Amino acid sequence: MNMIQIGTILYEDDTATEIYNNYSDYFKRTEDEDGFIEYKIIKEPSKELLNTIGEYYFNIRMRRMKQEKLISKIANDVYSELTKKQKEYLYDHPDNFSNHFGLCMYIRNKYIYSNKYDCTMFNADCLSGDILEKLSSMIIENYDYNNPFCRVVYDNSKFTYLRRLYHSIFGIYPDEKLKKYDTLPDKYIALDKVTNEIISIVVNKERFTELCKKYNMPENRCNEFLNFVDGYNQENLEVIPYDIAILCSKSLDNNTRTHWLNVLNSIFKENHSLVSELPKYMFNQKDAVLIAVKYCGTLLENFQEFNSDDDVINVALNNNGEAIQYINESVRNNVEYIKLALSNVNGYALRMDCMIPYRDIDEYVRIALKANPYNIKWVSPRLRDDYDTAVFAIKHTHKNRSTDFYQYLSTRLRDNLELALLDIYEGSASVNYYSERLKDSDKVAKSLIDSHKKWRIYDMSDRIRKKYNID
Image: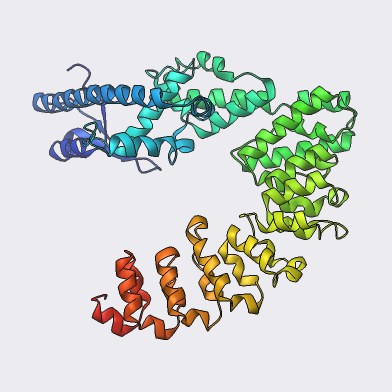
């Protein structure tokens, strides 16, 4: 019991709050800026309070022991199922943020929500996070699961990003650097220290200045990029190194250039938006342009000297079909480029003005509709009134999760019962875009019920809603 004394803190949960309410004279309640509440003992506790808190601690220990056994059991089961690729991803992304809707969701669905284990007394999200941390410690050599500092560090998104960036630059992970901080009493102060140390190595002005001199970078360009990076890093979680600017130089040897292109690629992979924020002079050579349009195809607009290059065009169109508008006019009508742009699920190539000649050609329109039926918004009036074209669009709805294209069909087709029934069973049941006649149709209402889309009756007439007891 000697661990319970003046200064002892209970952290808010149902039981701690109940203890505080029953013995409020012994506590001071505080709430920090993040809304976390703690109860601190401010005077010598009574024997009764000592016994109450002692029992509370005992129950916590028993609960924790049960939880740790459960975590270890499930982690071992999940580990045995992981592929090499999944382990590699987890090695690079051990934080919960990166896995909440991936591996953590899999753990919740297969193990926590199922009847395979008794997990009812634990919060599913927290438990899946703990299991992920256990899994990460089984994969990462320096990850000591029993050390709270390790769990805080490897679950921190900023640290794990820096860890990946450090590896892309230096070819090793900075995990060894954790050792000199893992005994500090405050794990969050230790996290700040190790994070700042890695940043100082990754974002190093002295190293960049030397590289600029070595590879004949103009001093004004060097200073310009220093200012850009300083401003960017001050505003963003995903800091970037100065060194990537040496890709502007045409004096790099092949190995050095390949290395920094790989670093640039890894940075863009983490943060796609950075592609459009970097100064244009970064992309004065084809290999850098290829990386840029790989992550943002419409950036082809900025690279007119490469807008006739077949490699650059193909990479840009594979990223976003709307890049078609920035291809040099002399080659833009290449059939392969047109088809590639229209078949891309990213962007709506058909809405570009340069694609107007293709909006009334059945073959090209169907390529666009297969990629995303919403493209029907830009097809010719003839095809928006064509029954077979509408059927084709509906049959490709679920695959691409398109829901609003029905509104762009002609008035005649939106009053076609057969088409509406097909939309109910194979499409999105876009009842709000049906004609007023169909919204008052019992056949439509019964089909919605049969297809388990009864909630769509909300968009039908007052008569139908009343008849089928929809308020």
